[in-house]
Length: 312
Ligand code: CP
Image (cartoon, rainbow, N blue to C red):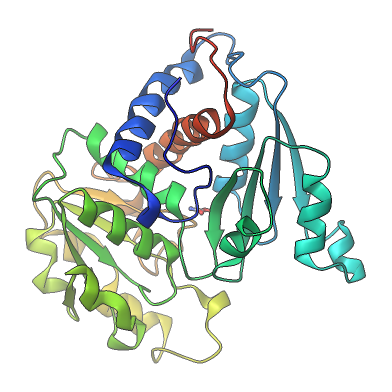
């Protein structure tokens, strides 16, 4: 069985082209299982996957759990409340104790950037980063890549516009890394106060007005304003933000006829994207969620699977 070049998935930066191709190929083999009468495959029978979500999640947590279960793994959910973290145990002690129970993979989401990296220095079991602070969300970028490819678009030379709160977005960083690596031209747009300093090193084009990017974008990825990561105010009001950076019928008039609209969720309808655009013909937002299960099945299989046929 082919496997990834590393036993952890911490950052998109660690993925080779061969790894990315293998993940996408494996995910495309996995996606059919969702349409089988019995949505189960024995690939991870006897394996245990710990889902350690120390920060809120709907899509990523459910997606990893469904992915594990569809491959017959035993999935165990751990969160801050209800675990001994609430009694003062350190995260490292918690995860070391969980590792002592011999899981086959640990999926970690944490509000602190770099936490999965830190754990990987002390833990031997494969770790998958399910989102760490403002740093990275590698599985989201991989499912976004799969979603774009499934629209029939070629990544090389594709103009991808990522619009919104770039500063606090781990989705933006992972997508910038992955899509640039695959040959796309990534543009970002948003208020100057929500632009991180690292953009120069990735050859990203920065726009402070969406009118300059909407007409040339093949893919528009809208981002939520991450209020939970903002201790100060980065713009005068949500209303004003929406007026200048929101995607709506008026701003969409200037978009390409075959533009693809994406959003990692959760969506704040009426703020960064109007409901009619989120639910409109160009939107692939729910396809992203569907593809997320296939990508996470692929990753669990590649990181802790054994040689078993992928056919049910
Ligand atoms: N896209 C994403 O990470 O969503 P959740 O926070 O609901 O997992």
